[in-house]
Length: 413
Ligand code: LLP
Image (cartoon, rainbow, N blue to C red; front, side, top):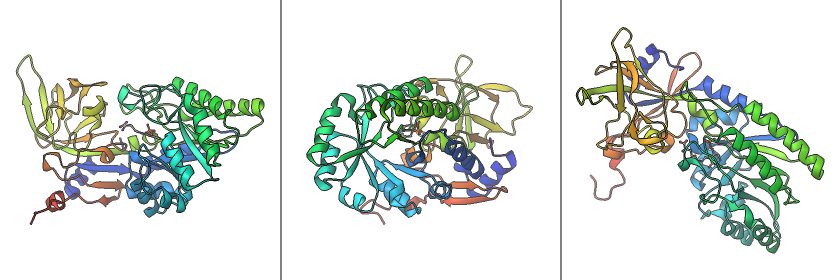
């Protein structure tokens, strides 16, 4: 935890709660760790910006030399506005790009994620180099909802359709020089390595392929009981696989990875306040209601994801088993569900909270501000603050005003 109690109090004093806080040195350390990914024949680190598209985060990663994985044309625009050269951005999207012509004309790399997308690309850009995303037939995620490989997933071109992809490429004179797979988030490292090997096998059938992007999905421990994937270990394994591939084929492939979570998850938290404490009797539960919940940290309600929760200043109080909930009129607005089961309550052992206590929800740098249910119950979007080296707190996104909540409604005002 990068915030001291005094800093959390300063955040509340200056910006109010709930408020996201990101830590520059933790972000930088995570990026440097990923930049050291072992490789045999060249390496590119793409930041999956969907995890946290804040301008401040993008600027930091730009300065460190990262490239970008964008999942929509809007993300492409955001990355360009942050200063990324289009050639450092790859668009990997579920949706066929409406503005494909202009995206590619700008120099953005396009990764065709279906046969339709490949055909659209081929019609507009015959004779070019192209990239395809393959569903290699196996996936793995922290839950089924974050698994994007295998027959139950619509992501990428199914591996058995590779010949159709090659035929489409031939029809439009495309050279398939880049191949991509991404099989889930919170992927089991054993499955990740296995799929990477399978992906190399598929790349072996694409004679023009020079670059293999193996996606992101590396597990990150937010809770003490969880275990992070060791990028050095995975990378060393892949390095050997790439060297073996050269032995077999004479081809040297450049490797890319595109983590989101691993670069930002533990560099962010939400500073919040206990707004009420209620209980449901002797056989029931104690609930601490916070001013943050699914509107800032949706992952627990969506996946049963676990985030650390610290009640600050509670030392010396009686311990209690407490269910933390958010302020929304929604029974699913729960911050402490059972792991992997958003419907079950899992009380945490903490000092008994009191109204007004400061609380820090950790592990909130990835898919929290980016994936929030903002404005539910008309709560305004929370601000974001960068905790700079030296302890300075820099506002990077203001709290939304009430007028902004309703500004696009026709007939307002
Ligand atoms: N590449 C592609 C094509 C992706 O779709 C994703 C994530 C990533 C890379 C980065 O995956 P990461 O390293 O962050 O696991 N919202 C979920 C995870 C689903 C993300 C979807 N795509 C979460 O809160 O954990």
